[in-house]
Image 1 (cartoon, one colour):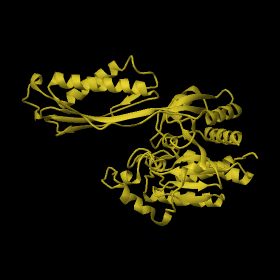
Image 2 (cartoon, one colour; image 1 turned 180 degrees about the vertical axis):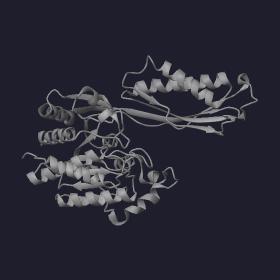
Image 3 (tube, rainbow, N blue to C red; image 1 turned 30 degrees about the vertical axis):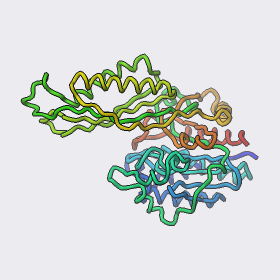
Image 4 (tube, rainbow, N blue to C red; image 1 turned 90 degrees about the vertical axis):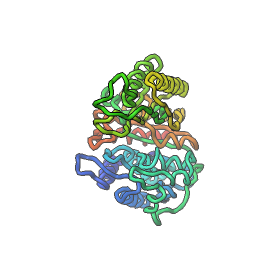
Length: 400
């Protein structure tokens, strides 16, 4: 039995999904978890699942499954977006899964199920829907999470109402494959159409606080200041230099948030709280980076006479892709796009990270134009979208 996907049907469904929460700016979408556009999209998707001959099922988190009978290979991703989201991030994997599961049903096999995980984009946490489903986080712990407006997840998911039909046991699936846009520049820059993921990098994230002395900006001499923000600036400059002989070109680190107190133009900042995040595929390297971070922060605080506090460390471990599933993707990529594909790590977190706790996983990337994602400008050429669909379908055929 050979799965024969229909690219035109796939693209039509992908554009239809984009209409739920369309921003009016290019192809941008605003479809945050549990908001009306998100729920409307999930209702439409549930209808498509039923029409395909699969059984739609929604768990307590709002994860939407389309179930084939008996043991099956699970495909999918997520369909929620960032506050200013692109139309393909997650949605591509969901609609590719729908098309392949539908085509497999039409062909009489193999058995393929699909899923759209909820809140991957972190309105409340990090890959929250798949984290709860996989057991990485309890429902009780997830319910206590809040968004930036102070709304709890428990309150938000009440909007699911009667959509919830019960839990879905991970043991019914033989593996998970996720198709996604790269969200980076490499495929687009090098002219490759397909990336077969080797591993998903690990991530570490914590806050660092420097406590200084709030004071008058006009009358406090520079040599007497205990300026918390100057400490942040010094720390960031030193970190960039000290990581030099530890990291690889694929290692990344980010200080994406800084909060100053009292945050006034005529006051020397007395406190600075900032985020420190780093990502790499090797646990040992991430540990070495943590040591450098802590030692450097302590050095800066001592030199400047500041208090220092480290927040709770959060993170996920690196995940290596399953050899059998990855091998099927590599063989399919060479058959569909000979010489125009590569193996590569994923620098972004994905639902596959959580799902890997229960089953073999693999991932497939298609190019992101200009490397842009998490932005209304996010896009991929439709020919590349179809190539990705065909590679994923071919891999499913090979797995049987």
